[in-house]
Length: 126
Image 1 (cartoon, helix red, strand yellow):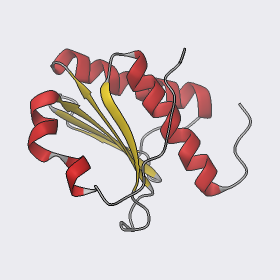
Image 2 (image 1 turned 180 degrees about the vertical axis):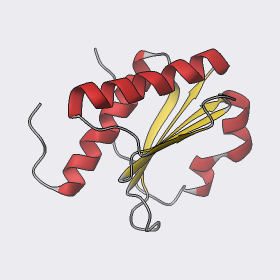
Image 3 (image 1 turned 90 degrees about the vertical axis):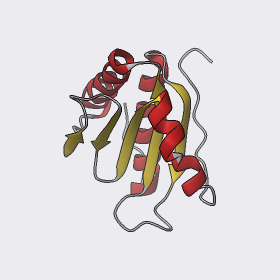
């Protein structure tokens, strides 16, 4: 894979790889939010859900694996993997949130960040 031309394009591509990886493991309602304009610590959030703890864990592992294999990056930190209700993978330039369905509904990050742009992405095979 050829790296995108600039930093913003690079982050967008990485976030799309994460979204496609989540989709491949059955992640639902996956969105990519551009939060860099309102949040100084990262440029984007990838948010997805799994039906149960096993699936949440599998989605997080697939995202980590695909990003390492396809673009050569690893998370700076991972939180919540043991409980698998909300796994956060911090890649610095973007953060992936893998939620259990009830936890996602409770925190409702999309409502909190409803005023930021969404980045389009396409699941593999679409």
